[in-house]
Length: 317
Image 1 (cartoon, rainbow, N blue to C red):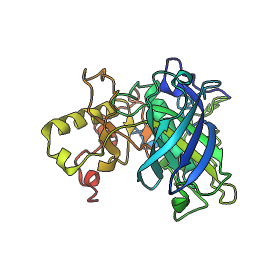
Image 2: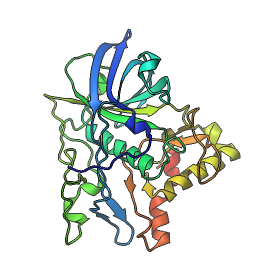
Image 3: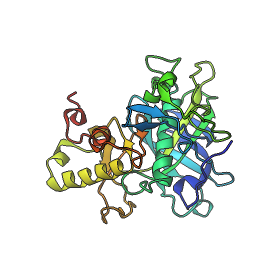
Image 4: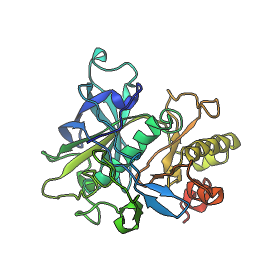
């Protein structure tokens, strides 16, 4: 099977294995995980309001023989419908890890029935990193998607193992196969698109659960009502949203909790020639568009509009 190659020194190329240790009053565990392929999305088009199978939107190559990162789990930073987020510190000797990897990171554990959702979010980070070079500027750097079979009890998300549907993950907008447009000569061959991804038909198994983890750069506090009153903050967030829109990514869940202060090592934005103070997170409901083939700017803008400071953003809708 063919995959995109990561052709530059991406943070996604640096780590191929992950060990997470925790020893607190709440829980104690040791977990070994390996890199896994993410879950590609079909391309949405505003020309016909349909999803399109497109060979360019395929999975990304998983690095082999890269660093094995060891982490000590820290505080819980929050949780939502898809998973729980913790801070973590690297416990390897510094000589064993790439110098560009920060000492403190964020580990996002999927709920045990939302591994597929986290795999989709991981793919969006892949896409933004390789195709748009936006990780590290308007979204945090991503260091990979990792999985492992659950072999021990007492893990930190055990209270939230499954929510209402333990036997299935969320349904995506591009999951309705009879509504996906495919070229008459559709033959992806060995390229792994959504259709041929192992995540496409994945369902959770309560008797043999899978653990899925997304490793990210650590940002700051979430956007607050106080931030919302600052005109300089609003200006910067509007520019960050603009960057995401120009990348052709519809976020579809842009709310206050999904907007955080940018990490300390955030790079200069190529479009705006500035270091943005805010980053967007949580892309499990996102999908891509190819702006080069879109013909109706009004419709495209409506789909890509993040709706910053709308009722949905504030949680009123």
